[in-house]
Amino acid sequence: MAEKKAVRLKNEDGASAGPVESAPIPGATFADLDPVKVAAYLAVLEEESDDRTNSSDSPAAQMAALGLLRPVGTDPNEFIPTTAALLLFGRQPARYLPQASVKLAHFRGTEIDGPIVDRKEVFGTLDKIIEDTARFVSNNMRIPARIEGIYREDMPEYPLVAVREAITNALAHRDYAISGQKVTVRVFDDRLEVESPGGLAGPVTLENLGQKRYSRNPLLARLMYELRLVEEMGTGIRRMRRALAEIGSPAPRFETDATSFIAILPSRPQPEPVEEHKPVITVRGGTAPVFEISQADRPEYFALLQAGLNERQARGLFYAKERGRLTNRDYRQVNPDITDETARLDLVGLVDKGYLLRFGDKKGASYLPR
Image (tube, rainbow, N blue to C red; front, side, top):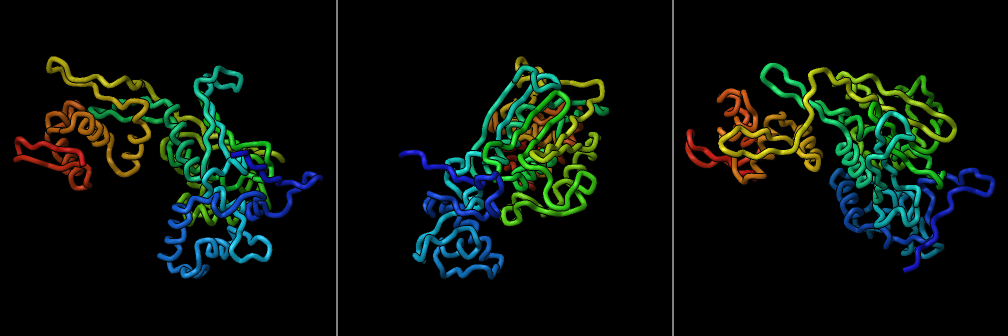
């Protein structure tokens, strides 16, 4: 099938042709939206007793009532998706909005002309882009560790909460009328940069950033809130600052001009001694294993920590999934220098939270991953 022409988002003089998020996309049809995503969103509105649509109407009519589709001429059954609709519900948003992807790069050193360790471009709806971008950053950040007494503490360079906020803000507030530029994420040895096209909008300045609320794309911001892509509208900068402060990192910095806005997250200061992650070493000859989390497993590992597990429990759960079972002894080998009671309490917690199933009596109990 021939590639359809991307929408033109600027007038001949370069000025934005109306609210871009609400602009219909020439050539696109309702069939270009993912019916599963559309149905899920409308179900959320119905569950929350939202009165903006009539559930007896067709999905297309309900989306039109929300301002996400525009009618075609006088035909009541034909609609054109808007920019916001394609960004959040489109099958292939970049087909019509090539500026909707995100470019990712990991540079060795602290300058943009340094060697590139990893690079990628991610496409899709905004929820997918956010997840894929956060995964790229997670896979490309260092995760040293320090020893506090008998316990080991992993120390990722950036809190994923702050990373996600920076990415989400960039996608929610970028100027989609600038069709020749994309959101760009750059990972350096000392910082993470998230650059979005378009400077600060409305009354927001660098001085009142985080206090003054204004959205270049209010419809898109509201939809992202309703889809749970943001926890609370207008609080992203404050959440970013708080997340960095909680791990002892310097405050984020921000730079802007007429064409772009850059959020800069400083990397976490790493105290000495620092112990870097190693590959997984299995048990041989009865020696206690050094069981570490591989780079590929880091996103799932961090998700477990965010879900409330401690680092010992997360490592133990990975061990159980790899080996198919886990005992108290295994758990103490995976987490050396802990007491029997600490191991018991940790395992009880994993059972209570539904991560493990327990079989056997007290002394010979085995735990299987769910």
